[in-house]
Image (cartoon, rainbow, N blue to C red; front, side, top):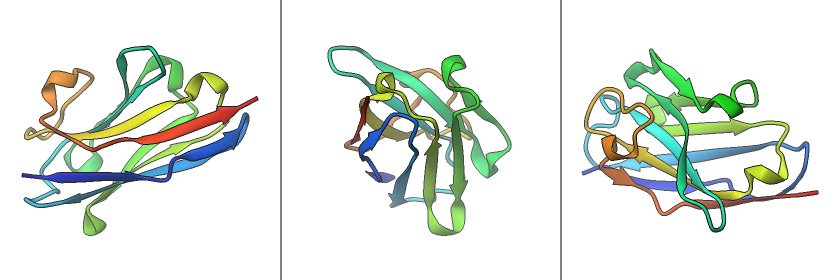
Amino acid sequence: QVQLVESGGGLVQAGGSLRLSCAASGRTFTGNGMGWFRQAPGKERDFVAAISRSAIVTDYADSLKGRFTISRDDAKSTMYLQMNNLKPDDTAVYYCAATGFTYGGRAQQSYDTWGQGTMVTVST
């Protein structure tokens, strides 16, 4: 079972940047597809980005393309989410997730392991 721990959240002004990390431990990480999701206050959890095994495939929520970048370092068993030009609407708890398949895509039900989340707050 893969265990996931997010870090890197915090308070940032609009227009700023943050890089989130998701450290994985447990069974082999390199074969797993991974993803980022977020849940804004009072809203449902939504897809942010996904990355396949070996980073062959990446996908982003349409509204986030060009501002967010997902990546992974298998040697460090860590996935990242670089977030640039942050907006107040990006305020949310960000979760990383892993699937037992090589790629999980946008559907939350594809992922069977979740981290506890890290809070990102973007101020005006």
